[in-house]
Length: 402
Ligand SMILES: Cc1ncc(COP(=O)(O)O)c(C=O)c1O
Ligand SMILES: [Zn+2]
Image (tube, rainbow, N blue to C red; front, top):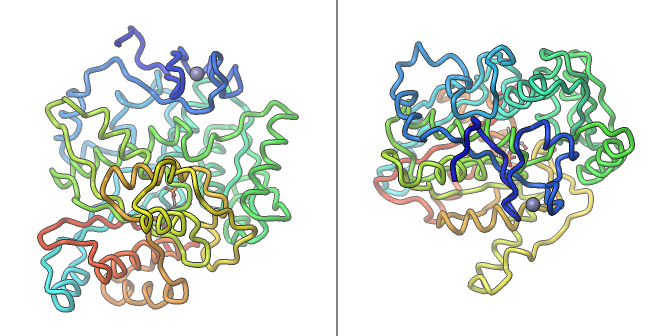
């Protein structure tokens, strides 16, 4: 159903139409009718209008707000940007040669260079840009978030730009580099004694007590809307979708956002197919991979998506991805299955080798979470998950600043 507003926020559970972010924030980000915490943005504009944006030449696309018409913001004056989102999709021939030499497969490999995002150099910059802009538009002055690291940096940077003060709750094992960076933006960082789960609990209690809005995590509409633009960017730069999308997996905002973008295009002139999701966890914190393997071995019995292990204080070399309690597994597991994809893991002991290999071949230095995704490419070849003639996109999520 169309409405006369630019967008509404629809409750995922009862389909109640939240009129705008004022109403959503006013109800502390819960559906006023049923209390559900997930809404998705629905636009009144015809999705076919995105085609002219996707056909735009490169010099005209300056940042994620190139797609302003399909972002949940009314006034361009509220835009907070550092030039994020318009990042290169690069051909990585050394991986193509590897696939040919060792597996005799002709595969086109492209890297999506989030390390080149000018904000904080991670996959989190687009989400932070949209969040900061929407919060500004709605006169929010204080915000809080629990983060394994990169969201902390990205939100700190972008919210500072918007004049919004932020408190970030990070787990015990978050990298010192993340903590230091948050402080340089003048934001507050609280290192919680415990894992990411504990950090989320403490943040939620803080939010509740002081009535300060807290980021809604992987399903937060502002984050999802930001990240969905990556589909538009791939179409703009490649004029096609990849057949396979490989990403390091923590909570899974990436696949949620890709699915949202593609669902919105259904029935339009640019209807595209969902890529196969190959989600990669670090092997020392891989609860979704464990749940997936178990479900797969039993041929996905009724209710499989609700069965997953919870790991207490996982010890991993990749704290940015360390999420021991994968509450989004019901969503991510289902999306992965819908895409005919896989959830796998990669041996953390090998991340340095992977980053050296990339440095040698591409002359760039990628961070640990990126190495997990790139490692996932090798693992996928090994397991026979990639086919001859396919285009495989690897999300390079962060640079070496980590
Ligand atoms: C560099 C990088 N890649 C991937 C991820 C995983 O993102 P998500 O699982 O939320 O899509 C994160 C964050 O957790 C990250 O910082
Ligand atoms: Zn509802």
